[in-house]
Image 1 (cartoon, rainbow, N blue to C red):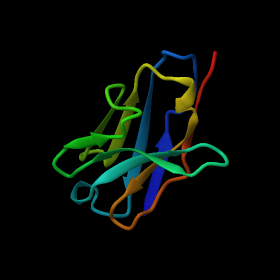
Image 2: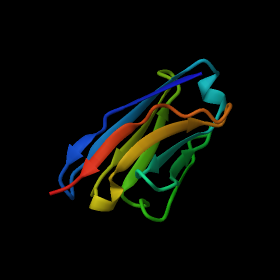
Image 3: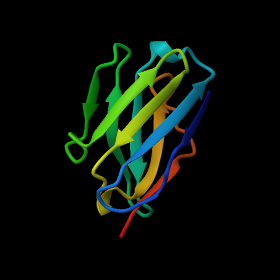
Image 4: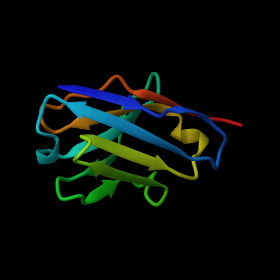
Length: 112
């Protein structure tokens, strides 16, 4: 199983970013996927989940600002992040329900 996140970077508060996660090594379309995030020194925080039917759920802290989607033809999940806040600063990981694997993460920094 391989999960490769990309798209992180530095933005000002109120800005937007779109993260991508390319998956391989399992039947992507058959498994739910999630995004989680971690601030150094703190635990993992669940961000969002997308089910195999495309249904999504979000943490209260990001609901209405983040949108998760998947492209089964490309074995890729996305996280569109709008109205970013300083407290969204973290390393973002995608995770598969296939075996619980996570990628190496992509850093998002929101600061003025």
